[in-house]
Structures are given as structure tokens and as C-alpha cells.
Length: 387
Image (cartoon, rainbow, N blue to C red; front, side):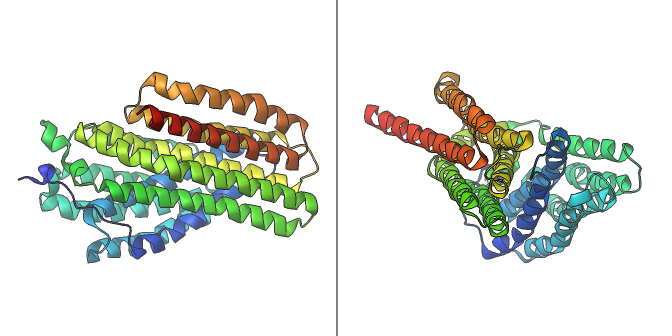
């Protein structure tokens, strides 16, 4: 039986992977700082531009560990070696599009060098029929592009960043061979249990950053109104966590299994590598808006914080809707819950953020998320009774 036809053994995330994720706690925290207060389009754009390479590094490393296992000495060595590069990304992030862009580029280049080393070794051994040109282009070539960009002035530097990421995205859409079996090669090696667990743990990181933001903001503005805003903010974050872990992870496990059984590799790629970025970005943006509310609870939220709250909630549910569609749920089935969620969010949360003091707007946000969670539970129970 070929590698592509073998079913992988399921495995759980190891302590080494959890230690590795500590760097991403720092990256999320540093990048989220730029969204506090009254962020404008430039601040939101900067966050997305700098956060995507960090997310992309994490998801590529996560998939690498998923395929090769975290207990292998060579994998642990690569994870240790890559952590300084990720630390450089985090340290450069405050001025990642400015005076420290060169350092951010070198951090991204180092991550790709480490990925290349590991995948090149496996490709030379014939792992899953991976041709040698793939790690050369996906790892080494893009690493060179990022490294060269460090010496270029703006905007040429950022054009090269975009081309490097575009090359990786294109390569993910290219089959490794003419047959469907060769195309399924690496995907067939994936442990779906590990995928779901690792993405869930990354969401925990982002949710933890949300709680950290609330507590730090309350410590700096220790008043009754700030306490109310922090409490309602915590309720909102806790409800998002419950929605994700009670329904999101279960749906992910079922959807990924269905996608692999059908040979839908693009659905696996999209729901593991692309769409969770929208989900975690939404949670991070919500946290920034909540932190602003705790800092200024007796004033109407500034426009940027309003966008953060409402836009973050919409991004969270939009990501879940898109993931459901890619798992094969019908359009009508998804729209049946997604459209009411948009209506409730736009019709209640947005006016509250425009008219009420910040602490009250956060209370409404918590109420809206709680209402949507109850609606999800009711629909799930109704579906079970019909079944």
C-alpha cells in the first residue's frame, strides 16, 4: 500500500507544540495593541498585513508537525530553531511596515528556511511522492524573496512580500502529480484529530489575549464603570469560546472527515489554512474594541472601536458560515442561520455602539452574542428531535 493510501494514526498535541505556541501569544498581543483606541483603516490594514504572515507561518508549521509528528528529534529541532525567527516577527511588528520592516522580513525568511530544511529531507526520501521542486519553490525560493525584500525600499519591499505569499498560495493549488492519488498524498497523511485540536488551541491563544486585554485595561482604569465593561466583555468572550468549542470543533471534525473521504483536498486546505485566519482576526479585533470600552466606559465608543466590535462579531460568524459551506453544508442551510445573525448584529449591536456609553454597548454586545448562542442551541436541539 502506498503512503497516499494509508490512513494516518491519530495523535494529540504534545507539550513541545504547546511550548512552541508561546511565541504566538506574544505576536498576537503585540499586533493587537495597534487596534486599541480609535483605529482607522490604516491600523486595521496594518494588523491584517502583519498578522497574516504570522498566521501563515503557524499553520504551515502546524501542518508539518501534523504530518511528521512532534516527537521526532528533527521536528523538535526545527521548531526550536524557528522560534527566534518568530520572536523577531513579534519584536518587529510594532513598526513592521515602517522602520522595522526589514527585521520582519528576515523573521519571515528564517521561518521558511526551517520549513525547507525539513520538507527537503522528506522529499529526498520520496515521502508521499513529493517532487523536489515543491520544497525548493515553496520554502527556499520564498525565503530568498523575503530576505531580499529586507534590503529593498518601500513599496518594492511589500510588493515582494505579496509575490512570495502569492507563490505559496498558487503552489497549494497545484497538484503534485497527474493522478488523484498523488494529489491526495500529504492530505492522506493528516491526522484530523490533531488538526482540530491544534486550531482549537490557537483559538484559545487568541481568546486568552482577549481576557488579558480586559484585565490589563481594568487594572489601569479601576472604576465601577470599567469593571462593568470588563465583566460584560468577559461574558462576550466566554460565549464566543462556547460557540466555537461546543459547535465549531465538532463541526470541524465531521466536516474534515467528510472532505477527506470525498477527496476534497481544497476544502481541507481552505478550512484549515485560510478561513480560520478570518475567525481569529475577528476575535482579536473584538478584544481590541472591548479593551477600549474598559478604558473609556462612560463615553460613546470612537468610530474605530465601534467598527472593531461590530466588524469582529460579523467576521466571526462569517468565517463559521464560510467553513460550513466548504464542508459541504447546503447554501440554504447556512443562510438560514447566517442571515438572522447578520440582521441581529447590524440591527442591535451597531445602534447600541453608536448611541450608548461604552460599558452599555459592551453589555448589548454580550447580550447579542448570548442570544445568538441560545438560538444556535435551540436549532441544534430542534434538528436532533427531527432526526
